[in-house]
Length: 130
Image 1 (cartoon, one colour):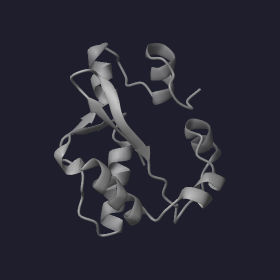
Image 2 (cartoon, rainbow, N blue to C red):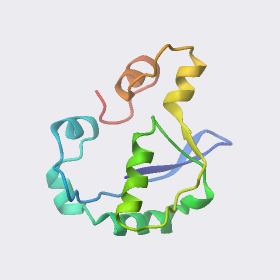
Image 3 (cartoon, helix red, strand yellow):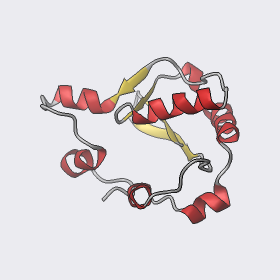
């Protein structure tokens, strides 16, 4: 789970962290490794159970008080499904902004761009995405 805190007054990331969770029903695909750089070896060394990772995230970032965003709805839906699966009260703020949707509206796109397309067309690459 990657998270960063953005200071809107200066548009800068002021805090960030990755909380690695151990998958319980799947393996890390080559697509995931290519997209994120997260490998099975990394998860074996640094991965934690989902509830433990969420507890750490909540302590460090207090997400209930902060609007959050993502590229599309996939990550939000996956988190919500995991909260239900582990019987965890959703610690995230109800305010969620879908940046993929907003980007499409802003630039008059007929369809939303995938994350790789966005980076290739619009922004400097700052991660593993190729």
